[in-house]
Length: 316
Image 1 (spheres, rainbow, N blue to C red):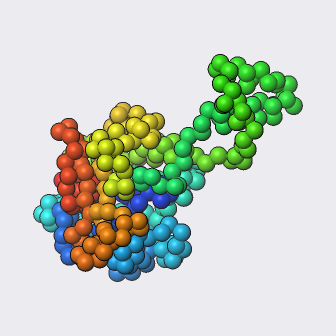
Image 2 (cartoon, rainbow, N blue to C red; image 1 turned 120 degrees about the vertical axis):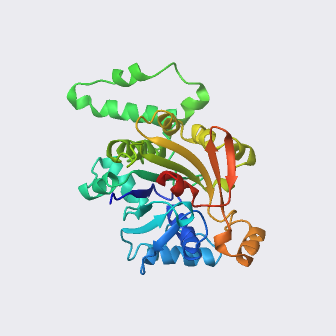
Image 3 (cartoon, rainbow, N blue to C red; image 1 turned 90 degrees about the vertical axis):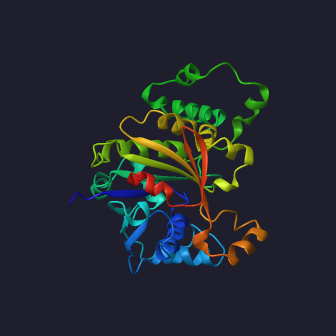
């Protein structure tokens, strides 16, 4: 029998942990388009995420208890309400921070590459409005870094003309006054660069589908409910073009990948800042809450089943 698998991936604070925690009650109560053949017995960090959600709060990324005992695990699932082909849903032991470090250093372990090569699809998470999303350098900071690097080459007989050649016309006085800002000692990798690199690895490594089709990648914009209603109505791709234009451009030309975008709210609202919603949330079964926006050629389609990104990546 051909083994099929789908892998869940995301950068720092991408929403993957809370999503996995939200899946568990649906698997246990057999709600949604996917059916689990058997759930792992001892997945500490998943149980911890579920516990947070059941108490009416999101699992914080700073809670080290969620990382203790964290390990690779997979769940055998069937789509089409249990009538589809068997697929392994894989959650690798790769935190967002580890992915970011691996991409920044170009040092991806063979074990991680093997995980990707065994999969024929993936679900990639991006969390809207996360304070861990790293913006690209603004021009003032980038210009100062160029000047600093040019000066550091003096010992190699390079002069400041290197920096001058790459500069455009002189900035206005208000911008010039900011030249004294402190330079970062080691700028973090912009989130959209990390996402582009993740996508590159998926292009290189994902296996073709058993039916000969292209590998499927579902891109999920988590915390979609937090966006301004007007931005939300434009769809996930419009949001990515606005916030991560480099990544959005890469998604428009993915070559051998078949990509679909989803907007996700794991519980349907803001547990942290909306007390009224939190009260309503605690009164209802968690497996009946949350929603997705599915973006396709016909526009946006709302749905209540948060399993749909995985089901689509599986081919259902």
